[in-house]
Amino acid sequence: LLITQTMLEECKKYNVSNFQITLDGHRNRHNQVRFISKTKGSYDKIVENIKLCLKNDISVVVRINVSEETLSDLLHIITDFEDLTEIEREILNFLFHEVWQEEKELEVDISTIVDQYRKHGLATSYIDENSASIYNSCYADKINQATINYNGEVFKCTARDYTPENSDGILTEQGDILWNDKFHDRMYKTRFQNQPCLSCKILPLCNGGCSQHRLEHKNVPYCIYNFDENKKLNIIKEKFFTRMHHSDSL
Ligand code: SF4
Image 1 (cartoon, rainbow, N blue to C red):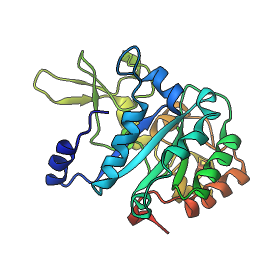
Image 2: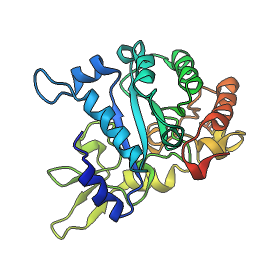
Image 3: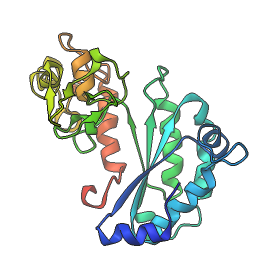
């Protein structure tokens, strides 16, 4: 929302080449959640700024949070990006993200919408919270990421409550992070421990889900795709259709 041409000039000096910008649905839905004032939503300004980034040759991942309420309107977003040039389209990618609170299966509806985006020349990929692939893994799965709460508690996953039981460590008075057992379980002990993954054909793509999922299913054999071979096949197909980034294209 706050991006300006001056800011982009400055970013380019420091080789910033990519932004991820979130939309919470089409105009009405987004503006209900994110507004500038009581009467002004932020949707149009954000769309304008996404285009400004593209004009400045900065690539943008537009993350669209998908929930049951946002679903019906998602096709309207396509119209707002119809005026893009071919070159601008090359560096824009829509990433549909099922928000983690949702328990409903939205996958089928989403894949129809994804198809429409692609038909209109907009690169689109779809992930749900658990299916972070190796390429697209969550920041919480990276060893040097830490979210530090106001009280010094340190967390990896930001999709769970910031409670002492969920914390991965603590920030000391000296400014060091003292990681706890949960951190070690997350980063090392639960890795490649889930038996079904070890004989799964898409393990190299899937990685058995994110570290939070691993932790929460520590001693129970699981599959983030419910052992459904068709869903796994879709992951492979998606890999072919998805243009995540220039260097990742197949
Ligand atoms: S078994 Fe399921 S979770 Fe494990 S790698 Fe295969 S698809 Fe992923």
